Amino acid sequence: TVEEALAAQAAGADYLGVGALFGTSTKSDTVAVSLEGLARICAAVDIPVTAIGGVSTRTLPSLAGTGVAGAAVVSAIFAAEDIEAVTRELRRLAADAVGSR
Image 1 (spheres, rainbow, N blue to C red):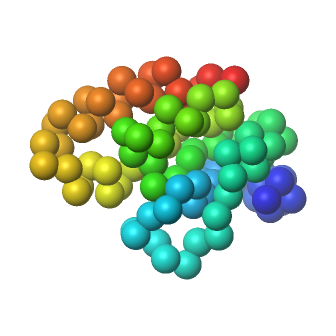
Image 2: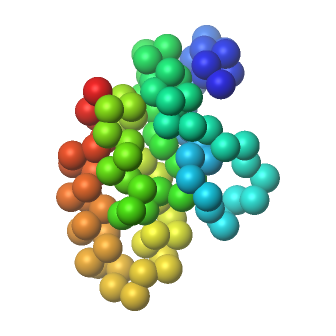
Image 3: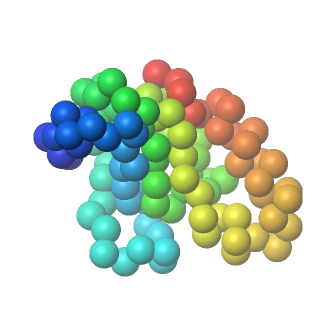
């Protein structure tokens, strides 16, 4: 939440990981955060925010305009048949979506 993000920043956090944004099997005990919630958090803090949870080639483009500084990706890479190709595609997509407002 914005309140948790501001508290973390006040306590000295130098970045935030916010999620889970999309369904993920990596962590089953997360609370869903909407893209609108992510954008509110990004706007409220002065430290970088990293999107996490279900980020893939399909979902990464939807991060555009939220203000995130980065995206954490696990399953999209490790479940890929061609890790190198999917990593290149994620990097290309991130260039358009990450850091944009």
